[in-house]
Image 1: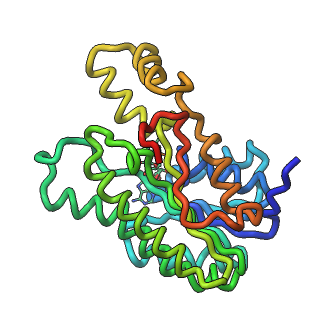
Image 2: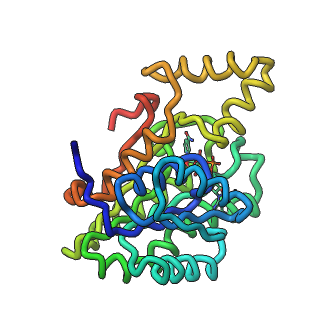
Length: 264
Ligand SMILES: NC(=O)c1ccc[n+]([C@@H]2O[C@H](COP(=O)([O-])OP(=O)(O)OC[C@H]3O[C@@H](n4cnc5c(N)ncnc54)[C@H](OP(=O)(O)O)[C@@H]3O)[C@@H](O)[C@H]2O)c1
């Protein structure tokens, strides 16, 4: 059995009331980390904490955080350290920008995408760094999208911001300066969450497919012939967060069943 040695570590997982964020929090917690989950709608937290408990994670708390708001970022970090005494792992995540073609997005849409999917990550990471340096084994893990290596139609807002995050992570990973911090990105493909239900699947339903047909058609696009399960991404997040992944730095790793067609 591989012991990820996360006991005593503390993780702040953003966008974690459901979907990939919650799955990451569950895997981190199951491996022994203290987990602070954060999301913008506090009404979702009781259910999320219940799912964590069901999975055997008891060392979890929740805070209401809109990742776009600077004050929320400072409070989230302060509350996490006040609750658990340290911060070792930051998982940057939130819902993504809307899908559509270039000419449907005005300046306001670009600004919103920038604040949600890029600026929030730059800000949280900057504010977390002093804590991560103290950790000695600090981790920054950004959840981006397989579209950073695969031209996905309609994802222009998302892809533009995610490529900025990949650039940020790569440059930041080179500033680690021997303090043990690693910075990596995890790139999901088609992993069945509310976001996929509300985007790719919704499009199939609008085209007249039943839910079952829509899901089957999406699965057929994936070389493994199935959609991903959130815990399959959470497992990679937990591994990257662990001391076992201490020499993986500046990487972008896909969890997409082979969906992305990019060779690199
Ligand atoms: N699922 C996939 O296969 C897939 C593929 C490619 C990329 N991605 C990207 O991966 C990320 C996670 O995807 P997902 O499928 O888990 O999405 P999801 O099911 O829509 O979940 C999004 C999570 O983020 C929280 N959130 C939304 N806006 C927020 C904000 N402003 N501040 C803080 N939390 C916020 C939501 O909780 P509240 O409503 O409580 O705030 C929720 O917990 C997204 O960026 C998505 O674009 C996912």
